[in-house]
Image 1 (cartoon, one colour):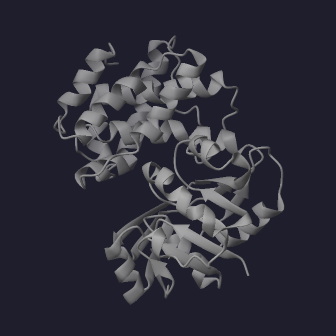
Image 2 (cartoon, rainbow, N blue to C red):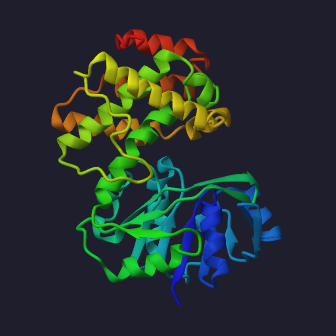
Length: 346
């Protein structure tokens, strides 16, 4: 039987683990958090979806990768931790992985760039998650929206291991195998780099932030810079949930197009009015955000092509100040960035 190591039992890791365990797969879970570990050991995993609640026992759960018995050998490791924890985990995961085993990445951004230097891309399967999940309490989860998993090989091939991975993931959500997983990863990056960075500035839910006109302008500027970098690498962007060009605003756009794009961001603000970005949630818990792995990778890739991405560069600096406690969460942060970038209201 296929054996799976799941590293990270947060908003996505909980439902994914529950789905596999409920389907009879052999899974070992690593939470990285003693409180979550103790809750799952005692009460199992509870997942609510569309008003239906599922409960599964999960006896093989540890609070640290160092606690996993070294005689355990896994076919897959599902990497569901925050991006900033990946480098520390990989040296401990590799001895537990079969020689033909694969690491499946679920992170937003392009974490695969980091793994390339650590283990080689041939052992990595990228996965993009297009559904929502959150942890309500330790060991208690809710699937907050429907959607798909997107998986694929970097070379576009339809490998045997993709079929095995599809079988593991299907109990949680439908799976799409794509020949352009790079395009899928890049298509999700603009929205993640935008919502997470802009979403941390004021300390408010997304809906309140996007009521500020200059915040919407900043949203469009950051998003468009990411798309421009993707274009520079010849990436063909793929539709995940929405058209990846929905919020793309070229620099030479006229007033009408700018106004129309602004209206689209207003709709986003209304639809996700009470959502707090994951970066804001991290800051409120006193933790670092993933800004270096979202906007940061955009800046890095842009530099390689000699492209200027001033909005992504500026917001990284501001988010770092917020992380360090050197800058309060307030609306003035939006206005300061807009001034720095010479952004104008529509």
